[in-house]
Length: 361
Image 1 (cartoon, rainbow, N blue to C red):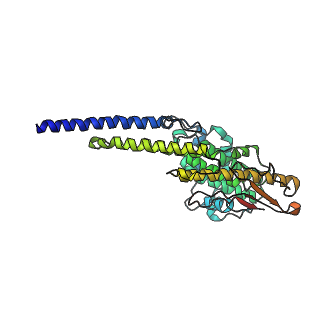
Image 2 (cartoon, rainbow, N blue to C red; image 1 turned 45 degrees about the horizontal axis):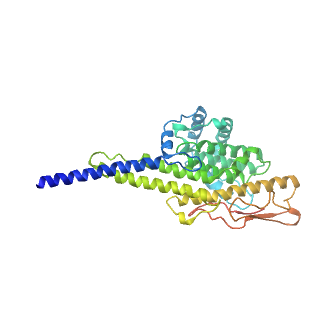
């Protein structure tokens, strides 16, 4: 009798486990197949894409150039941050730590190759995009130094290379976070440069960091799902729990991305606090930074045309940021001006070197 009861209990437990297993597997599969906003597709599609894209010869050439950089004692990001967080257009001379003394010829070559390659840069399974951060910062440092020395055209070429590298990284299966950092750096450097502004710079103003932020959340979700352990042997009994947790996390991540489509630009709904709050704060802040660059470059173009700061802000003070507008003050004779938002868009939590949204020239 006891063995029958024990056998029945074991059979019941096995049945419950099997139901949980298939339920959890189905829940995770359904979560992976849910469409994401901003035409990002599904997590399942992203996982498949990660193994199919092949690197182009242009990407391989750029990777070789980047590999040649030795930045163990150079910190170009510190120089770029120090200059781009200023509220004016003053650019200080780079110190030795910026790395330009040793790398300017390599930076110039990288800029030429990247600008020549354009949209033919495809990283794919080469997986070199994580190495691009320091190279992009060097391009930014070089752009600032060229602008300081009066070479506006050369400076804009460096920033264009920054933008192209960032844009080439965005489509990669796990490149969205690196790409958004590079786009932010390119925008910050562009804000410091003099006119004439090249036509391609309009692409900066058209960037939607909310989409990039949703892509970051999606890619992090896909990465977690891909790294879910197989749990061999007796540990497989915990697989249903693991799958249910990942399915729940995937649904919350999707909800965070969807919430951004409903939230006014440059705003964050604090009721949506989640593991992705830092990403959402960053995207919100970058949205305002992009508009600041657009406004300042328009003002600089007018000053170059008139020989003084204009009496009114080109295009008016309207802002894409919800319930906000730009306040422009110019001194008599157009000798100096200030530009600021009607409210300060807060930087993301614990942000360092976030550009001010108040400018004085």
